[in-house]
Length: 118
Image (cartoon, rainbow, N blue to C red; front, side, top):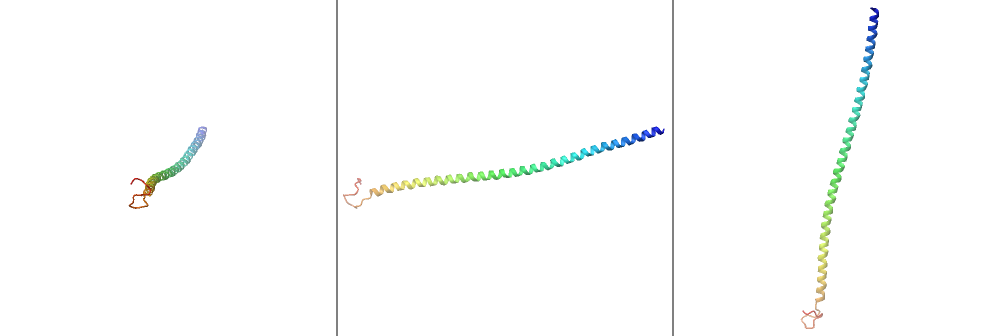
């Protein structure tokens, strides 16, 4: 009977130590999994921050592009207006030159200078 009791005691010690080893391994795996989860959560939060930063930059770039496009449209309008005014000014210069040519230096006479048929 003593042999059975000693075997039972030895068996109990082995089972207890085996369960402690099993628990230690499980505990180690749990701690490793928690550490990995914390790392992944940190990486996810960093990725979100970078995404928000990139989206903000994209928004700013889009706003700047729209503003530049609007300014180019306005600039083209000013250029068109400038060209139209230059064309009108050139027409007036031509008309002025024609009128200066037709001016008579002698008023109310038959000897008109220059003779234009008027």
